[in-house]
Amino acid sequence: MIKFLDLKKINEVYEQQFHDKLRLVLDKGWFVLGDEVELFERNFARYCNAKYCIGVGNGLDALVLTLKGYILLGKLQKGDEVLVPANTYIATILAIKLAGLNPVLVEPRLETYNINPELISEKITSKTKAIIVVHLYGQLAEMNSINEIAIKHNLLQLEDSAQAHGASKISNLTAAYSFYPGKNLGALGDAGAITTNDDDLAKVIRSLRNYGSKKKYENEYAGTNSRLDELQAAFLNIKLPYLDSDNEKRVAIANRYLSEINNNKIVLPVSVERHVFHLFVIRTENRKELQDYLMKNAIETMIHYPIPPHKQKAFADWNNQSFPITEKIHQEVLSLPISPVITMDELDFIITTINNF
Image 1: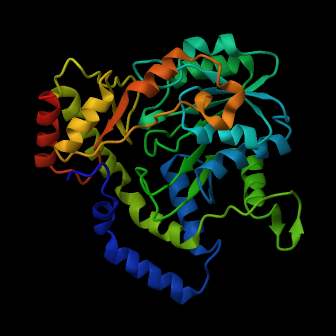
Image 2 (image 1 turned 45 degrees about the vertical axis):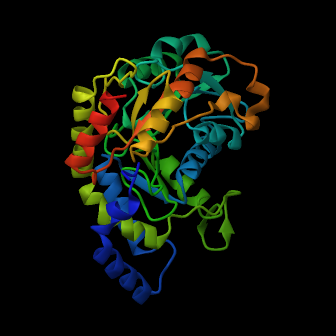
Image 3 (image 1 turned 180 degrees about the vertical axis):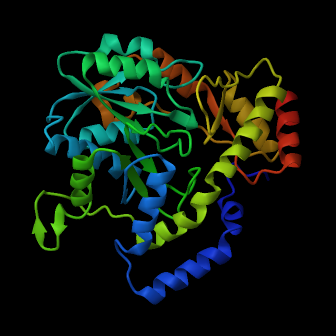
């Protein structure tokens, strides 16, 4: 079986270093907000061309705490509208709601799956104060066009870079990251971070992640407990130096898919900006048949994502809304195996099998 994502094989190369780090952390006896978190925050900030990195518990918290930070700084107010892609993973929209803000959905481009800048302006009202740009599947959104719109309408911008480690290094923007194990830079559990150049925002988020406290037992804000785990930070410090080379392997695999898959039942993705291929997502009207066929040939695939946010039970008020491009995407997408540990023989077999469908 060719696994969709073989996390065991991906992490095997680091196994001895993981054991050594575990021993080091155990010997130190400091398990929360210690040297490893500080080191990762410095390393990842430098990698992202950012002034600050704040490690948090997961990618969702990275988004929520950033939005709440903007509210505390007076840059947003409860009830403000935030533009967001209609076909993003539900976490992006949950973050907006959890921060007390109102998400407004914008359709993507069918070709790239990312938010369509040409449709943003028509969604802007007097209540629109921000936009969360999602670099879906690892491809940067069309940032030049989006920046122009944001500047024209005085909108805050926040990058959801949960799937775009190494692609997104826009130093003037604040970005939220997830280090869920399956990401391009994956921890061995939940982990997340925010990168920013905003001095005030960094201070507020550091406090919010730690019960709203800058000094122990003194709570300036009504915060939460969302601190990057010391051991996860240690593991991420081991893996970060290999991120760019791993991304290069992903791009090489994607380029073979793009150049060698030749089947008129399949629509290949289009890259118009930098892409680190967290996922390689095709479309087909014969998705179930193709997925079943590939599984019979011992090739595992995944669907990212089968149900669009506006059709989820969690957002019942939106269920009657129509976003036809988003709905088409969610009905047709299928993700092929892509990771730094796929062999050339496995890749040959995947491509040949798809071409024979």
